[in-house]
Image (cartoon, rainbow, N blue to C red; front, side, top):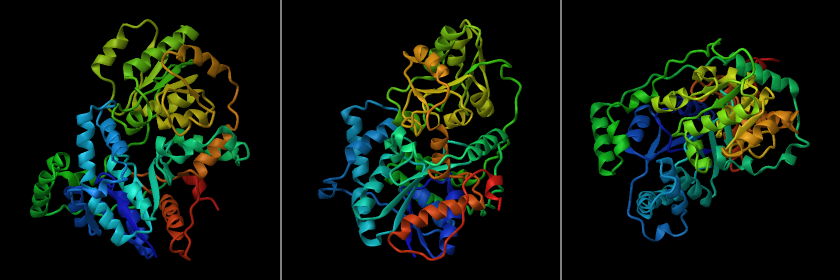
Length: 456
């Protein structure tokens, strides 16, 4: 069986890593958590998992050939500096360079069959990916999918880093198409149907001495973020209270245009969009486009989970024309029933495609390449909105949706994984590991919403 490494996971996604590790170990695999900071390492070790903390060392010749510049730029962009100064880049390069000697030593000794990344796209994760592949390890990236309750997976990365973005529309010409599956996926999105989740393990709070020690070690490594949360970081693994999406009557009864907003700190926004617009800029551009097309059409704004700032609300309050501020839980209804949807690169824009709703986006996304969404800019949106509405149907729409949701996604909720979804994740991990050490016992998984997965 194989050795599987979890690459610098977060405490917040412990439940997913926990159930996956237990399933993999039951099937004979060895699992190691490669931790980037003492606090995370302390937590995972307290849960009984095999861990390895990456020490920070001085690097000299080991830096040659390492992609430190590109990954340092990635860290700067994630920190909110799309055009960092040379000093900022230099500091980011220096931080990453201190991980290099131990990464080379770890992969030289352990040589795992597969390295699994989940959701994170930091410069360190990019560096781990590079070193792992240099040592011949298979790599698998997973992350939040384009629909609620799904996960995307790819050998190269997620979102804008995914190899899926290299495809062309013609790649879907002969791809399978399953209209009933597409309709079932749409029904699952609108109904908020999820499979019964797997039970959670009890969280073991690290002892006071262990937490204090991890705090001191994090301070010495100048990892101030983990150090600040050292004494309460374990709380991040506790389940958050989730509620089913509520159907609302707050949306306009007639036709409307939807604006789907994202958290301004999201990795997809900061890494996959050049000069991403602010909330106000995107809303005002969509409002101008809607007003020019039909001044009677209201604009429905779906804010991110954190809501809209007071400044944005004040900016919108004096505008001519009806602007409706919806709620985050209205997203699926607004996206699927609107006349058109405008976003930067929100993943849930795929729900609009399921419903046949035109989607205009200004940033790179997993649906950019397929020709079923309309790439635009803030300046061109006024001209592109009528064109998108005039297009009867996108070519290969059902083929794209079928291939994306059946083969490029796993139907598993990362926060509340179910048994079938976990089997799909294990299946993909083992397929990658099988290239080095084949296994004989297979595991069953069926793609699709909960009721499809339970059908004979």
